[in-house]
Image (tube, rainbow, N blue to C red; front, side, top):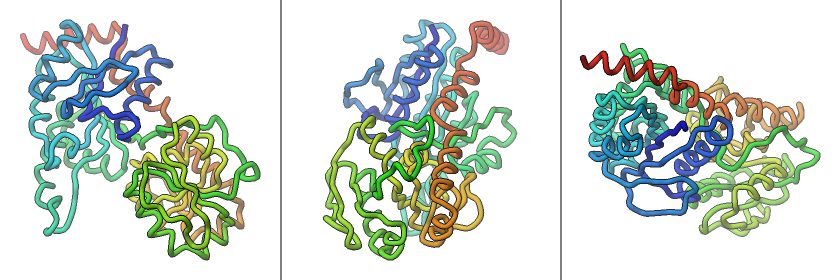
Length: 370
């Protein structure tokens, strides 16, 4: 039996996008590749209902916990990394030391997915003062792993230039997949309702409404007749730009997938440079819902072009004239290059080797210690 240990800061299904990401990956690995998952949670003792076993420990206990699960045999470990999840300053040195111990044990083949790398900010922001330490931890972690993956091109470029300089380790550029389902094909615009989705946590949706308030003419141009507000309770308006807002609350993933498949647009309040790490953006693209971006951008970012894979106030008229079905299809095809199965297949191939390869790795580790 193949087992992958997935290491998280916390495990809160339905309340944490990173947790939902890990659970969706676990399901795909099991169904498609026969790889089971066990979670190890390092920064929270809060229990939850999960379809997979979970162990809770401190970073200092990581190696011991993982070793007890593998019974001393070759094991496989994937760390989902977001610095602020593991420490208040976003620079979890204890985690880096724990991963070093795992590496030096020679028992585990380790991988890391950088959901985040480090923060940046102005000198009067705390992120500015913590950034150097956060970069150092990211370097240490990247050097302790056999497989390194991240979501943004700018993250990958930093890792290649600084974080993994001189290290021969596969680096995978993998924008996040959708946690709310994927369409096998794209429903045409003629089968969709003239609605726009505002989806996410309360803070994200409030930013969306602040920005949508300046787009009345554009919303009229694309024919939006209703806005659907989806997510935890927040102070959402009853209407925006004269268009009614229907509050739907928290919607199960399966139902949400159906709603998005019938909607024409989804509003994205994030800037272009971080779209590839946005679960909201991934969900829209995965279901062919056209992402409506609050800020236009020039050129290409992570394979995305304004007016081709998404629309903004600057490009929406051009997209309308060339047909919205084209934009919907382009978004879905961009997403298909890194959909859930692609992620799972990458880990199955690079991180969870065949028994023959596992034996070779273990013999190599033993020889290195001799």
